[in-house]
Image (cartoon, rainbow, N blue to C red):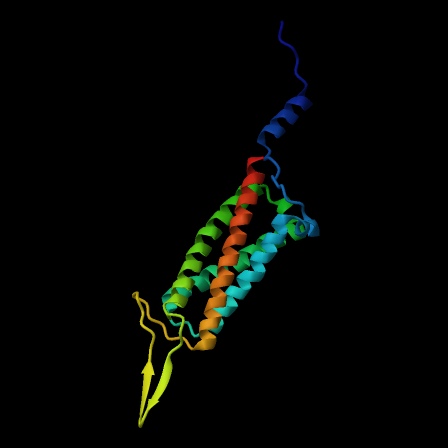
Length: 194
């Protein structure tokens, strides 16, 4: 009888520990403290400049709906997803969800960088298709002639001065948001690898 008696309480604790899930992995602070980190500040900038992108695109006359529709989809979707992501950290609800938030952070920002870079390129292409000069109406005697800038590609847009300026601003802000998402991706990757 060399078999040792086991404690039933220790056996129950070992079984419970084997079936429980690991806690959430979070590198960012919870609550308002997240806004004091570089990642929190970048997410706030993503939200702010992302809102400016979709407001500016929505206020233009959308000369190429297929291209600018993608810009609108990306900017509105990432605006709401970034807002929800930041809200989870500010309210502290991220601590209640047992997932690896560092992996989610890297995956989300990777997809956002890809989508926003495509949106930036499409918005820049739509703006550049105007040629940088608005169309002009010339009165030649009794005839009214319209002169359009020559387009070198497959896309031809007609934008007046203010509409062209709005699209230029949307392109610039889309580039800034792409940079913010890229910086967030790099910071999230560093947190994930630690």
